[in-house]
Every structure is written in C-alpha cells, then in structure tokens.
Length: 228
Length: 286
Image 1: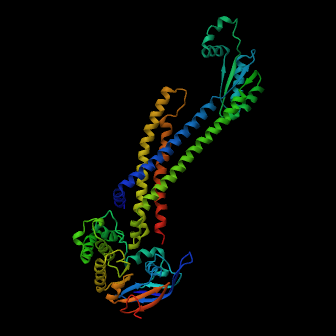
Image 2 (image 1 turned 30 degrees about the vertical axis):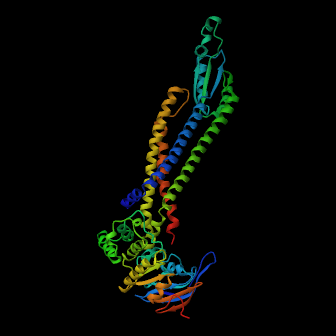
Image 3 (image 1 turned 135 degrees about the horizontal axis):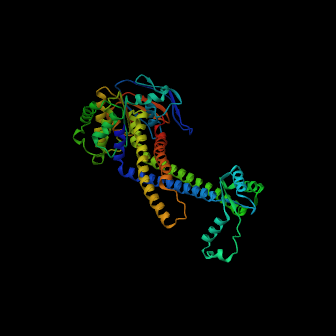
C-alpha cells in the first residue's frame, strides 16, 4: 500500500529530514511511527501526501508513484488518504456535521450522497448526537473524533494520523486509539505517529522507529522502545 | 460556486465588512484624486485658451484690407480664432471694465484707440510664433501678447497637468496596494480552511473559484459604496462651487464622473480578483 524505496529528503536549508528510507506497509496494516522530535516522522507523512517531494528514491502509495506525480494529479491522490491532525483542525464557525461534510463538498461529491455519508461517519465515531454543535462546545477527545470522522468520510484506503493523541488526556487518547484500531479492522491501512509509550506498548502493533532521518527499527508487535 | 462565494462572505461577515469599507475608502480617495486631477487639467486648459495676441491695425487700413489681414491671420498655424475689434467696440469695453471712466467720451475730443485684431491660439506655447507671423502682415502696426505672463502661464499649466496626473496615479497605486493587502489578509485569516481543502483533495481550481469570486464581489461592493460617496460628494461640491465661486471653472459632474467611476469599478473588481489570486498563491503551491 505504501512503499518507500531508498527515500531521502533534504530541505533547501540543508537540513536532512530523511535518509535512505526503505519501508513497505501492506494493505490493512496498522503501523506506529515513533522516534524523537525532529527524527523525520512528520516529513514521512508529508511525503506520502505529496506536501513535500523526496530528493532521492521513490515513493508509491496505493499503486501511484507519488514522487513522479504531476501537480494536477495530487488532489486525486489525497482523496484516497484520510488525515487526522494533532490540533484537530476543525473549522470553528461550522457545526460538527458541516465540518465532516466539508471534506465531501470540496471534493465535489454528489450532494445527495453527502447526508448519508456524514451520518455514517458520525455514527462510526459515536458523534451523531452532537452533529449540530460547534467545535467549541466539544471536549478535546470529541473534537478529535470529529477529526477522524472527517478523515474517513471520503472512505480512504489509508488513514494518516499525526500525533492524534498529543493534545488529549489519557482516557480520551485511549478512545481515539480504539477508534483507529476499529477503522483498521474494517480493512483501512492506518499509520500513526506518536510519542505515547503506553499506547504503543499495550497495543503491540508494528513499530517503525526513526532516528535522525533513518529507520533504526522495524518490528512487528513492537514496543515504543527496544526491549534491550 | 456563486453560492459558495456568498456563503463565504456571509460566514466572515465582520471581517468582510471591515475589508469592504477599507477598500471603499481607498477607491473613493483614488476616484476623488482623479476628479481633482481632471479639474486641474481643465483649469490649465481654460487658462491657456484665454491667452490672446492682439495686433493693432494701422489707422489708414480700409475695411477690405482688414478682411485680408483677418483671412491671413486665420491661415497661420496654431491660430484657433481671430476677430476684428473696431475702435468703437474697444472703447466700450474699456468703459465697461473701468466704470469710473464711463464719461471718458465727453472728456476726449475723439476716440484714441485703433482698430485691432484679437487672435486666440490653440496652445499657449504657440503664442510667440503666432505673434511674429502677425507682425509680418501688411496693415498690422504693433503686436502685444504679454510675453512674460504667457511664458509663466505655460510653465504653470505644465506643472499643474503633471502634478494632477501624478496625484491621480499615486492615489490609484496606493488604492491598489491597500486593496491587494486587504484581500490578502482576509484570505490569510481563512488559511486553515484552505489548508484543509487542499489536504482532503480539493483541486486548486475548486479552492480558487469561490475566493476569486468573493474578491470580485468585495471589490464590486466597495466600488458601489465609493460610487455613492463620489457621486454625492462631487455633485454637492460642484454646485456649491458654482454658486459661491463662479470664477472657478469646475467641471460639470456629467463631464467627469463617468470616467472617475469607471476607474473606481475597474480598480475595485480587477484588483479584488488580483488580490485573491496573490493571497491564494502561497497556499496552493504543490
């Protein structure tokens, strides 16, 4: 589903974010991407979305070679990805329903489909009863649920979550991680960057660890840190 | 797309209102600058059109000779009009101008003034050449045109024209910068909306459309506001000026408002669109 082959990213400032990264993530996998701040986790996700282009190597996402993709095709790649943000990024002047519907409207979905699909996404994340509320009336955990509903409403093949529990208390963090696991069980590939040791250690999923832009560990059913 | 643009404007009501008011003020200033400039150029043209060359005719010229002189003068390049002024007419004018001399007729044994030919030139800077040509004609005794005054006038009107056009240009550029910046700020305030749009896969054209239309609508709204201000303000000022300062040649509203308003609408809409495009560009780079 996601294939990095010898990928490097050097920014114009000379900063090297990733070096010679080769990773293969299969359809339906759940992967934690861990590592200290500045290790290249966010760049990894940005390369998948073609927010950034690699300066070396090849990246393939869902059969599309992202590194060679013409700019005009980038929106259509992104429609196959769902993205969840640490800071939720909900539009404060729009209701929960409108925030989720926004992802469908701006991707020119048939208007008759929008209502049922938003309803489905809100049911999936358990927020249907709050559809009419503005984000400011929701707790952090609830806002992130809406963020996840917005990510899955387009029925993406891959969900990318960048520190989705970074702004949440432990209980809310657990709920969000369970939700992402449930979405993964339906067949969606899920890639999560996190600093949350506890969640990674309890869930025991595949862990890819980055350090200074290099993959230093890729372990099935791994822990946040190496056992040694 | 129109619905999206209107929804966008409504959702950001307060910011849109503030931005539109700012743009309206900028447009009104640019439009007013154009009106001031047009009036300065108009005043310069009137002053120049009043420059006159007077040729005094010899006392012994016959009426037929005078007509030949007149025809010859009218053929001189740069001459706009020429008329013969009889010595009787000249004396009556003198009496009208200086009312205290109303009884001059009775004080003088005869009219001392000669017949003359009054020549108006198309452009003040031609006056010297026209005067020289007039001096060469048979039957013309002496030519006066106030050389010093004319030279100063030509310099003054040139300065007035240049400064008028510079003023209008400067204000138009200032309006342009203010409008672009104002619209850019309204887009900046909505960068999260644009960011989410692009991340979930909206095409650049889809993102751009409503924002460009919003920019155009904001520009048009501001143009409408400044049209009201400019039209009302200029009509009031022009009528006030013609009532209390009749010697001040103010252009009639119908003569100058259409151009000024065309400038305002063009600036408002075109720059509204350009401002949106500039504001969006950095958010839509892939």
